[in-house]
Image 1 (cartoon, rainbow, N blue to C red):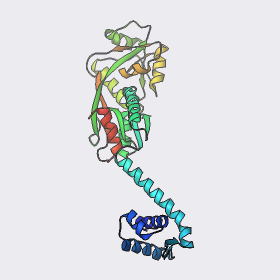
Image 2: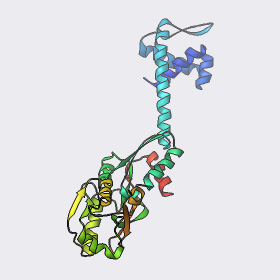
Image 3: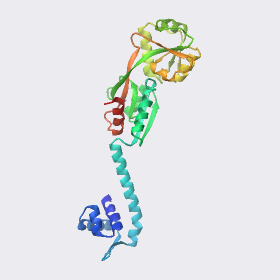
Image 4: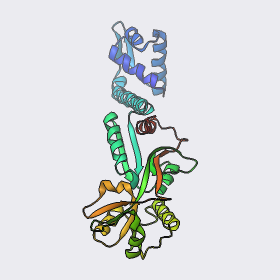
Length: 287
């Protein structure tokens, strides 16, 4: 059933006059009459009794009017929602982020929420590899990741991240003492399935500098690694971004040489049309 027929029905019931209702709907009276007749034919009942006093609802018309009004209200609300989503001003935005964007991602999300208060934002902590998978599956709209991204995904560079060595605060070392530290302490690192990119970066750094840790122990989250470092249970190679969640008793030692830096950025699937996501990316990248 055409929504125009319901709108004609509701408008005529409110105006009580074919002339006034036709003007409100911006149609001719014959066109309005035809719409009402079509609706009556489809519903199988007479909706209006037409006389010198205008158009009055029949008993059947009065019974059907509340449902027609409700349908029109829902339809208009749906159109408003569609328009807001088309403009990227409303809806739901799912975003991924990792250790390298612990500070950047929440800051950008807070700014976006302020600019777009009607948007529901979900920020999820996950590895770059997991973000890539969810982006390809359409379950994630955008994410802050370690670059490069897979070819089918688009990305924009936002910053450069630095590899650092997290040590107990009592350790009096600098970058020149990294070899000795790794020989004296076990290496604490994020499990491969939780931080695939960081694990690869660590392996490349160790290989390039011919470093062999005494022992290696893994954990599933950064906070646990830092707690173990604070307890002097080992040292950890981590992104410099951990400084924003650094607990007492831990300090960071800058590293030099190959495989100590990488780019981070925001990534998305360009094959999916999403104005809301695009507004977020524009705000984050400044483009």
